[in-house]
Amino acid sequence: MPLSNLLFAVGVVVFTSLGCLLLVSCRHRSRINGLRKSGIPMPAGWNWITGHLLILDRTFRHLPRLANLSLVIQELCREFADTEMFILDLWPAFAPAIITFNPESELFISQKYNLPKPSTSLESVKPIVGGPSLLSMNGSEWKIWRSLLNPGFSTASLVEHVPYIVDCVEVFCSKLLENAGNGILSLDDFATKLTFDVIMKVTLDADINYQRSEHILATALSTITNWHSFWDPRVLLNPARPFIQMYYGYIMKNYIGKELEQRFADLKRQHLSSPTSQGTKKAKSIIALALEAFVEETKGKEMLEGAKLDPEFASMVTCQTRLFLLAGNDTTSSTIVYIYHTLSKHPEVLSQLRREHDSIFGLDISQTTTLLKTQSALLNNCRYTLAVIKETLRLYPPATNMRQGLPGVSLTALDGRLLDTGGFHIIINHQATHTNPRVWVRATEFLPERWLVQADHELYPPHGAYRPFDIGPRACIGQALTLNEMRIVLIMTARKFNITPAYEEWDEIQHRAIGWWARIRSGIWGKDINTVNGDRAYQTEKAGTHPSDGYPCRVELVQK
Ligand code: HEM
Ligand SMILES: *[C@@H]1O[C@H](CO)[C@@H](O)[C@H](O)[C@H]1NC(C)=O
Ligand SMILES: *[C@@H]1O[C@H](CO)[C@@H](O)[C@H](O)[C@H]1NC(C)=O
Ligand SMILES: *[C@@H]1O[C@H](CO)[C@@H](O)[C@H](O)[C@H]1NC(C)=O
Image 1 (cartoon, rainbow, N blue to C red):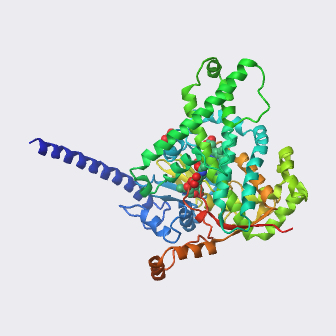
Image 2 (cartoon, protein in one colour):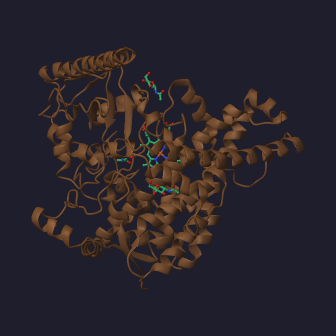
Image 3 (cartoon, rainbow, N blue to C red):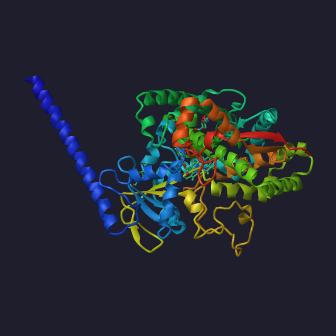
């Protein structure tokens, strides 16, 4: 009988797959069980079927539903003060991981061994970035691309970008001005649009004015990110997801491809007219500089003579550009919002910040823009401003760091025990490292002075324990750019506006809008948890840890 044969064949396939799965699961779990029995630190409550998944779920229940996974892991870290390191087995949802918040071993991971990026760092951003990028590459491939892209972030380029950033921030200021005294607004939305304008300008030399109008690339990127999750199965298993991401990925690829062709045509024209000249004085975008760096290499010389841009190079640059748009968008914008959040809680810091701006840029605020554009070196004098930014990044780090463990490479826990990293992902929890009470004095307090004291002062930041941008060769390429951008934002806004969170009003409005049934339900089961460590503006799962509910706030003009 053909049908019974078919059923038999299907049966065999299903059983063998199940068998294999069972075998792999058994092998995996018995390894973890072995480690557990030998006393390697891990949360209690591990079991053979679910590993630590239920522990994670239980911890999640003490936190808001949308809290970022890093905050959940930070909660777990509290139990491991004696080792500052533990194993978390979330397999098969996630690779088994070593979580660390031990600064000494983190320097080993990122600097001494410079461990490779795991394959998940490629896969998890692939729908957004389209392929390999600086973030996920390893070894020599990474080295080549890092050196091609470095010129776009050199000190000279950064200086040339300052006037453009100032222009974008002016739009941001005028939007705040229009909304001052006009009810609740989402600062997160304003800041995200600002950073996208900046990143588009510096990477592609595109003036898109996204702060005032829609833009095709922005729509594409945000649709893809909205359909993305690093772990949430409700998003990942949605059958529409791949098609939507593919379609918008195609739009992004097309747009960036066109820009790239344009820059290539510019470069060729320039090469043909005067091959020896060093180009025009105009600030060059990151991709224009990458293109030039590529042409410097042997292969590129022929390319200039040829008619077409090397397709392999073009497709790689497209992915790198998409990475910049991703990496530069959320991290910077959520940090800008958190700076305002901390300032709203520390009026004395805000006053001191304003005094610094008065002393460097003078009392006539209308001169600030011109001064910034013509004397960008003044940025470096704003030491207190930088200290405020650094301290905000300490308490609200917007990015994580993950590496691939290797057999034979061991990490030393605080109690001296060795953990072999083979087969594990290593996750450095920035939140817990940045507030590790063993090494930080007054660890959870917001104290910008830390960044201004001498090395013998007790507040002086401990070595290796501050790593919002990562430490070592793989540290963030955009660090100086983003610090410039944030300083410019503060210098141009801090003396003009008072920004205060409006969560209470916001919650009140939400509560009225949810309807009688939901109100009865919350009356019976209690209100949903909506703070983390008492902070209503907690970091969410939304890419780059945007603050909860988009940071509803009120903006008022400063009365002189
Ligand atoms: C507040 C802002 C930012 C923070 C906190 C931040 C943080 C980080 C961190 C922690 C890493 C290491 C990631 C890992 O190991 O998985 C990283 C890498 C990277 N960041 Fe940023 N970043 C910021 C802004 C930017 C901006 C504005 C850009 C681009 C224009 C950018 C581009 C990159 C790139 C390309 C890498 C990969 C570098 C490499 O592996 O060679 N970042 N960033
Ligand atoms: C980087 O190297 C590690 C270890 O060799 C490997 O497991 C990983 O897949 C590589 N990552 C990528 C993105 O290729
Ligand atoms: C930046 O990221 C946020 C959060 O993912 C997203 O909502 C926003 O649309 C992004 N901006 C752009 C222009 O893609
Ligand atoms: C959660 O926070 C980390 C930084 O701590 C960030 O890298 C990650 O992108 C956030 N999660 C999501 C899904 O964005």
